Every structure is written in C-alpha cells, then in structure tokens.
Length: 229
Length: 229
DNA sequence: GATTAAATTTCGAAC
DNA sequence: GTTCGAAGTTTAATC
Image (cartoon, rainbow over all chains, first blue to last red; front, side, top):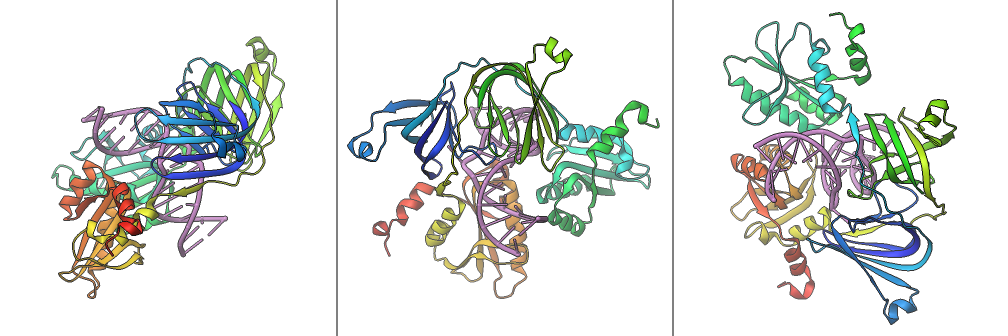
C-alpha cells in the first residue's frame, strides 16, 4: 500500500494510459493491484484482477532520464493482461498483513422484494391469490404467479430497477404461459422500485401493467403486528 | 487511510453487516469511504458513494464494553444511506493529500469495434456497402447499416459481449426498418467478440446471423500498410 | 466449469 | 439534469 507519483499503462481487453500524478496504490496478497485517485466512486482508475504476479524492474536509462525510480510489471496468471506501473517517487509506504475476511451479510435484495410482494399481493391488484413464487417454465422461473379473481392468471415480474429487458423477459413468460389452457388468459404485471420511462412505454405497448413498489411500506406492512391477517 | 480491526453496518438500498475483522479503510476527500479486505477484486466489501459526511462519535458504554474505541458515522448528503464503522483498534494510519487526477485515456472499446467493422464490412458478408454508422431510427441508432449486394439492407448490431438483450434490440430495429420501402428487405447480423449460447439460439430462431469478431485481427487489418485498398 | 442474472453496480454520453 | 447503454464491468447463483 503506497502513495506515489506514477504513470500507468494497461494492455489487455483494452489499452489504457494514466498520465503522471500522485495516486494511492494498493497491492493485495493475491497479486492484484488497485490504483485509486482521491475521488470517483469505489472503482479504481486502473487495476489488475487476481490472480497475478508482480515483479519490480529496474528502470532503463531512458526511464531514469524521465525520472522513473521503479517499475512494477503486473501480469495476469492466465490471460495476457498486463499493467506497467512507472513510479517516480514514493511519498508513503505501508505494509500490513490482514487475515481472511468473514465476509458480508446482506438482506433486502430482490428475493426479499419477491417475498414481500407474494405476501401482499394486494399491492399488485385486488383479489389475487398466490399460486407460487418462482413458478417454473421452460425458459426460466416466473417471479410470482397468481390466480386472478376474474379467472385466468397473472404473471408478475419483480425487479429493483425496472428496465426494458425486464419487460422483454416478462413478455416471453406471458407468451409461454398463454399456451397453457389451465392458466390462460394470462395478464402480466411489471413491478419494480423504479421503472425507466423506456420500460414503461414498452410495457404499455405490450399491454403489461406497471406497479411501482415502495420497499419501506412493504417492509413495514410485513411486520406481523401491523398486518390485518 | 487506515488499517483497523472493525465491524461495519450499512443501511440504505439494503442492509448489510460486516463482522469484526482487520481491514483496509480508505476515506477520500469527497467524504466517500471504501472498506477493503485483502482479496476479492476491486470492489470493496462495503462503501459509501460520494458525496457524504463523516463524523467521529465517542462510543457509548455498551460499545466500550464490546471493545469499540471509535465510531465513524458516514451519511450520504442526499439519500438516507448511512454506514456505521465500529473501530476496535487501529494498526496503521496514514494521511496524504493527492491532487486532482488527469484521468484515464482509453482505447479499444465498442466504438472502436464499430469503426473497425464499418471499415471492414467483408467480415460480415461479401459485397456489403456501408450506408452509415449509428443509423438513426425512432427507437435509437442502429450500430451499422449497410446495403446488400442482392438488394435491400443489412442492420448490424455490434457488442463486445453478445447477449440475449442485444438480439432483442436488433429484432426491434429490423422490425422498424422493415417498414421502410427504401430499405426492405432488411437482414440482421449480430456481431460480437463473444456470443452467449442463449443469444445464439434466440438469434437463429429470429433468423438473425451471428458473427464472432476477432478484435486483434480487425485491428491488424486496419493498419494502413496492411490494407489492400 | 460454464452460463445466467443481479448489482448499494459505476461511468459516460446523448438528449 | 435525466435517461440510457456500456463496462477491462464484478459477483453470486444455477446448471
């Protein structure tokens, strides 16, 4: 882990170059390297994905003339990816051995949304009765399938962000389910926390209803003492 | 920038928790925070996207009893996202002021592929003549449009990774172009460096040709002295 | 191991 | 500023 003034060249899936500047360089135990600036989000300016090897090279005469004091040659162990780090000066250098990480515990992603919607089908429409979540079809599972009070079924696709490809996916499901005499007629509902305008337009064109989900509200209603049943 | 033994809680678009372990913590000037382990790729275990504010809180009695020496409360300036970093012990601490970064110079992405294909339409099919790149339609631009020797046109969709949604996109374009008497009949070609089996199957079903592109070869052929014209 | 779908996606460009 | 597609996407689940 060091703070250094450096320039970087990467050749692999694309070619990229970072001009001379002061940056934070992190070398992990697996050989991977991250080069961060003091801005942007979590994505480094440049990096090498593990597993890879780092070798420190003595700069040649030209490089020394340019002010290079040290060159790191980082190569990927399987692909032909390579990163050359030309270090001009090191401002800070720190090394520390971290142990294995126990890893992240998550909750509240799409599976949660799906469970909440299945438990509270009234947010989709009145009188719906759950058939099942992850209803299997030949082209993949439908997120939620419900029986409609007027007869037939409702296929519900749930996303955190509702995008155009979600509408396409749902269209394919409906088309397939429509062929089953036990299920048809099949309505389709696209439910998401956000729905892009483009997706909304396509959904309308395909006669698919859109529902914007409020995760907070769903979660709140799901607390047992707040539920009416 | 510090190496510390800590546990982390995040509440925002989801809830997440990191058990006690030694990790690398990076605090950038814009208030953003990254928490890295000594493994994985460039994605941090946990993070806060800028802009945000960091305040250091004195731990309460319970926390002190648990061994917490310092608590960071990182809040996003616009959303309700919040991250709580409970520091038990600091192993290394370093601070350094980096200047602005001149940024990355890239070459060799989709735009390049598109240019190379437009210049070497023979990789798609014989006798094709370029109409134009980024041919505009009501639902977005077609990557490359060419005139076919047998009459009619060819719509070419170019991707680095050819996936099912690329085929859907191309299908919509062809459908639209087909309505134009000056263009029809319209053939569709899906060209990518890699094409997923699922995409290939769908393309076949839709009567769309698939072409796998070799970036190296295209680039090599594009060097002026290697070209035949 | 290959393939597919999701991501606290991030990033950049076009509108 | 919003929207939309691409990313050296990465990552996790599923076949």
